[in-house]
Image (cartoon, rainbow, N blue to C red; front, top):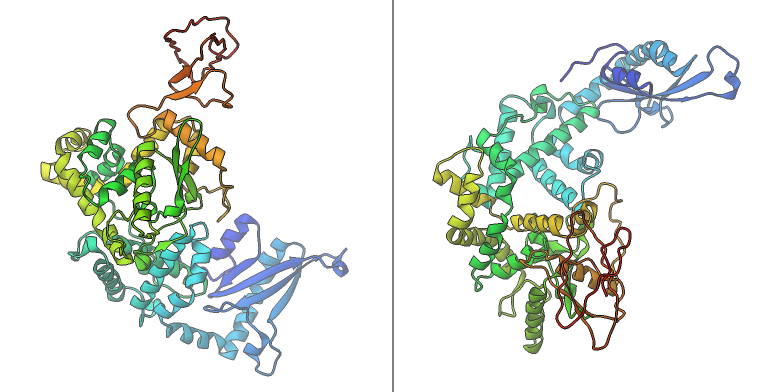
Length: 560
């Protein structure tokens, strides 16, 4: 932390002079705020600019009032007026003398010493709890509602750990003791760090709380608190080269094409997590979104290409203090979306819903595949807790040769087999199925990258918070299902578009294969437009005469 100069060229003065916005000045921990105007009665004079100066002492949100210096005075802001040739003239030449004068008045009244004593005895935990919302509003204005709720909960936990600590003495043993308490509390509340010992990697919750502690200390500095430089140092430790190599190898977190179907085939159909992972593999949803699906989000869409199925994301399963509870707020604003389902998966869901209706069981949550109708919130939380471990175990036992060996060979660093297994096991998460789905979308679908970005629920920085798009109507939903089926998203082979020549079915979506049924004694024309460079056209027919007539610009030849 840099020391402030006791002149007008302090830290804020340097910043404001560069930007030529002479509105804030700080000296001896007292902040001076200036507002400028050009009154009509000063026109034609050598000093046409007027500045009103208000003072704010350290630790106070409001400006200094006249009653603070004199109890008999009015309770109005204590402001001073300066005149000058320009804003820079007032800021550079007039303000330093006024600051020295005000400093003498404040010292004579004893107000500065009283405020310093008040700041010295304040509690860091109380300050964090009091200013939590202001800190989030200033430093976390661009995050989503779910992230802000998580930060708010972490900050309140941090406030409890900081009770009894003087923020102006946060250094040495006091700082190290606080960091140890934060790490220990985070390890106790996480099942992944139950065996944490000093010197091990910090739990993820602890790293997040250290980040929030830095935001809180920066905010307190703005209020005038003298925070030690040791407490302001951020953790700049680097991961090992092996860990960096694992993070940069993206193929380790996304299933290779040759292993994707082998992994699905290796899953035990009797395991509880298998239907959930199948749903995620062919929809690309986050695991929390899959576990928060409702039966009311499942739609059956009849149409001219047969029955199609679609799912709607309207919420997710909560975490942290809301673990096991379904909330109506997805991770991002684009999380509210519609996703086509493969026909075979939609048929399984339809049969499951019909079975529940016949047995009289009323379950709201879709992913409850148990036969027990009394599946409760506690069982959902237990399932969410055991899902990752059971999934990794099944993948480890079944895919050691089909998945692990290719990933080992793709490594930038060579490890022993045990270390490779541990690292790959940790990366085999349900979220890798979401990455596999995105790979199919980018490689097979006709959607643009921007459309794929929104369709998979990623955050859109250009979109206003909580601004939902208009939901597609039933015809648009059917056409979306048809496009995904014809592109073969998540499937080995794309579906075939079947239609009858001469029937008015509207615009045909792009597809790889088209089967036409031609009634007897019928003559028609088909125009096939090329969608990508290098596209080849093959025509085969049985019992039908195919004749090439002519070529049109930017189109493949029409056939009769």
